[in-house]
Length: 280
Ligand code: SAH
Image (tube, rainbow, N blue to C red; front, side):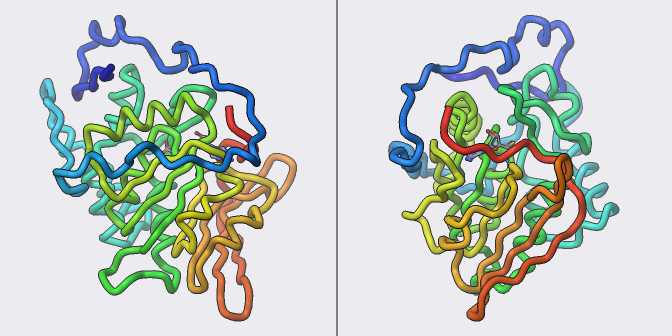
């Protein structure tokens, strides 16, 4: 079954007849012991080889070309202080409107987080850019200027994973909600991203098979950084994640793994959905 892709911008009458993910039934999953259920590799994630990850197809717009709006978004990101051109150019390439609900397509390039169903949200473009920029400022870039293997916790709709796929040799992205894992698969399938591996499982356990990682990035915030992430990070690697700083407050934390141990830095306050254990 293929999901109808939103065109950009949408006609209002077309919006009425389309359903939000929030209204869709979540596929039932058997209850399992989360620990025994380490993330499974998607059946042949690299199957869709063919087009390079850099050649995302253009939408068939009904007026405005989405690339114009994306350029505007990227200019704004630069004005807001994002300086890494490699990040800006990846954000220019990935069509964010493909990852949001049909009814929200017209807000896809605003600097706002948006609901993606099941109580979760796609992060603001500014936060995505900022976190990836921080990830690239570690001592972890390969000779080709890319990050090596990167683990993302919280695939959500797959947008950030798609951006990461431009900047990393391999991306392992884990989602604990089956409904969103399936949605990300649908969103990403037409983009044919051979270096992106979608995994269904509890990201708090990490994904040992892809380790060691040059970068780990989380889109959900917990009380602290799980030990598995620290273990699975390469020496020279960097974690960028939201963590709790109080009962209702979070900040970004950057953790660098050095030969002598870990170095932490707390940065600005953020507001992410909670990091939860187990799968659903
Ligand atoms: N990067 C995403 C943002 C999704 S919101 C995007 O571009 O859309 C954060 C996601 O983290 C949610 O989908 C939530 O289900 C997921 N999440 C929370 N705890 C998790 C865990 N332990 N393992 C994997 N995913 C988790």
